[in-house]
Amino acid sequence: PLYRYIGGVNTYVMPVPMMNIINGGSHSDAPIAFQEFMIRPVGAPSFREGLRMGAEVFHALKKVLHDRGLSTAVGDEGGFAPALAGTEDALDSIMAAIRAAGYEPGRDVKIGMDCASSEFYKDGVYDYTIFEGEKGRKRTADEQIAYLEELITKYPIDSIEDGMSENDWEGWKKLTARIGDRCQLVGDDLFVTNVEFLSKGIAEGCANSILIKVNQIGSLSETLDAIEMAHRHGYTTVTSHRSGETEDATIADIAVATNSGQIKTGSLSRSDRMAKYNQLLRIEEELGARAVYGYKRVK
Image (tube, rainbow, N blue to C red; front, side):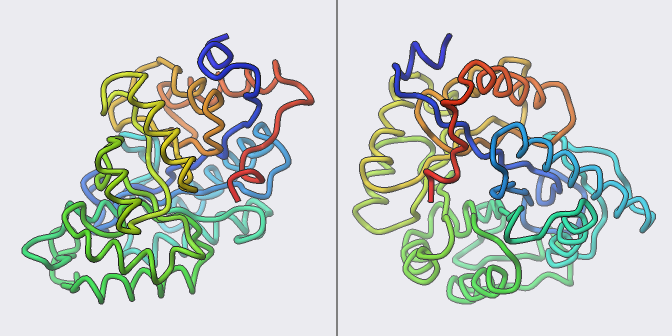
């Protein structure tokens, strides 16, 4: 199988799925600046149980939104894109869905966010009005950091992607110093799966994790180089899909082959997203008792 071919014999870590269940930002019409709100079923004993937990929360969220008269149509990545009131409303809805599915937020299921803050960073200011209209705030880098810290204190958020803009290296450094010890800070736009940007980030103390998009850097060799460099320097990795996807499930094998421990491949709907989850189920079945659910290793 492909994961063996790429990773050799010591590949048995099944990734924790990071499931994008509410879309905001440029992926939705909702007045929310942040692009993705994800659930991470970290309390599951195995990948298949994690997937089941995620599916249950996803369907519980559908009911939460439906009961409020909000849209339950899905966006590009299979998550809902309802007209919620703002960031906290999205997070509160997810908390309600986790509880409704019978799980405990923070123990069984944690929350991840992709702020995609480069999308609303203008002239040194994080301008939330671009997506949130007049209700949105304009925040300096320090205020942005304080806001993110406030959110991870109030909610069980253990992963934030692109919390600062790709051009705000100084802000990234401050954010990492402030909350990097208690939250995974994933660089996507910051690193673009590129070893040159990653080595700069490592040298400057920016972020503590990298998002891996195979078709962004363009070759499998460069992808594997980036993952190896990250792991060597104590950074975690998140193997990721793209907003526009196909049925191809190669990234499922890559996640297992590299002991990545985490995969971000959309929500629990749309066949282009499900293809990856189904491939991971097949891999876990093949590994049998040797399979380790990745979160234990990531932490």
